[in-house]
Length: 438
Image (cartoon, rainbow, N blue to C red; front, side):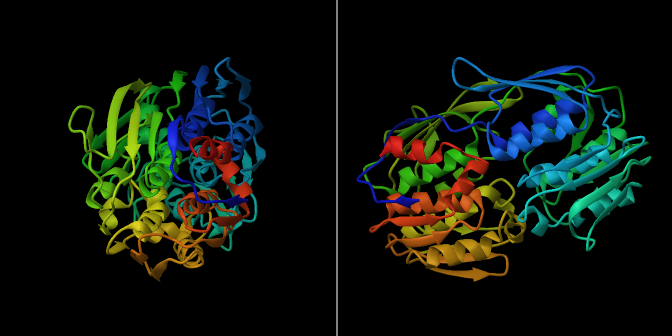
């Protein structure tokens, strides 16, 4: 797929529903004893894998399109301890592969195998397998580290576990296991990560408590089915946001975007890069105006009013990473258009995504004319004011595919994205949405 440079980007866009929240809403609904309604569920390959997975263990799923073109999903759960044995194909859904084992490990009986595509088989699962074993789980992985993952239901006991690396997926997995374990389970984060799991589980009646960076859960009464409205995905909106900032003359409004503070770490990074930012009415020279409107269930929702901005280089450290992990490839792209050097460090977690995103981003942007070098925990970019263009390989990674598209519309000569179909994992309509702004 080829993306040619554009004069400017103009218009209004509603990003697709949040992928992280869609995964969790469906999975937790399957754990409830009764009925859950999920409005605005993401219709994409990854989140369909989660619906197939919960159907495989016995949940009843009814999905339909609403008059507004959104997907509505009704789920009848099987209860905390009612999952039936199954072979589960997670496709390319790393979130599903790393979170669902926490629930299955504590079942009273049964055997499960979780497997997926070639990309999934290269993504480590030992980070969830090891603490689950500490809780008493019967779990094994290929070579001790990679999928397929085999589990047999076992009696679990609570533990106190300090995450070696900040990871919302590992935290979520262990909190689910804690719902089925005897005693209390406490997860200690080195840095705060996205809290969608805690928000949803608390709304379903789970006994959760937070004390600083420690989150504790105890086995308690069954989870209640609830109504969940999934907000627009900030990580998806970020591609249009960044395109607007780097294409001169652009002005775009992004509506119905999730504004959870643990997910919008890109915004303070942008502020350090010289992007004027604030709430509506705070000034006429702001490049990003954040308008919080209301809550979508437990999640804050709002709009972003964005226009082109001049950028300067900035430093991104480990403290920034958890709330901006999915947007760090876009920070590399921003660095190409900035004045000065942009450095990202403390981001080893990028190596464990759909691709090794440090290597993939550095190689991909270098091929487009960027002055960028890889570092063990990130990368450094020398701003040159833009990119020439060329060819970039998505490597089966949806975010790298969309990165190439954004680079293309902002480049001087255009970009061909090899393997662009990977974008459908999280944003099936991305090409059309980006084109609607050109």
